[in-house]
Figure 1 (spheres, rainbow, N blue to C red):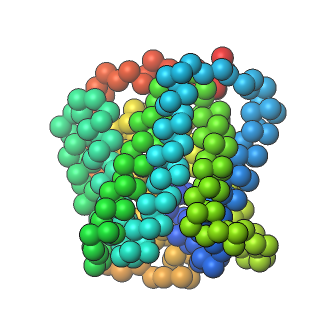
Figure 2: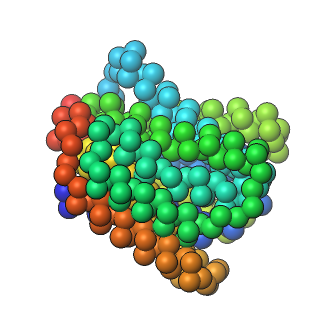
Figure 3: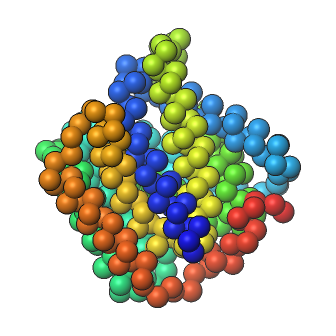
Length: 296
């Protein structure tokens, strides 16, 4: 339990730190940059599978569909929707929509205990407050809802794969599959200009996104998900805006407002409430041991 809690908290906090380095790569073509990010991450993860002696696992047709869906919705479509929602109405709206992830994961994770739902609702309120209810429009909302679907798929479609593949291989296979898909979208949206030689700061930014936000955060999340179950693990998604607030403060980019701090406090309170809920039986528990190592 403790390892799952620490891993999930660290994973979502690290995802939130991407806001602090986004300024380093903001001038690089968006989809080409995402393809580069996942390519670097995939190489690191595939090397890790080789070093750890994790052999290639042949998937069934059903498992292949789950992996394809995880990659398409959880990585590719999620990133496309976040980018387009931000372009349409700014980051506040999509951040607020994604703040409801804990509630949806609690609902999709089985029959949640009332205390878990209360905790998820508090986390959602805190994340919304920390993110800010900025102005928005219908296109931004629709793209934001698409990002929400992608974020939920990122966890729910991984659950059937983790007992067989483990956290490292799920992360490696999905990031590798995302690269050609993002490259195709980039060619359509950005043409031949989707790739260019990065500047020094852009190299640092993409290195951080690939190593920390993708490799480390993916591994921690997929290692924690089977231990906690989607309902309890989802509570920690509320730490994403908290990570952004802390990173902005540390880097001197932004000083948190009273609403930011109040929202962060509510997120933490909601997580504590949700974690005290009685654990409902969840099918994901069947694969905890094997998914922790990823060996088969």
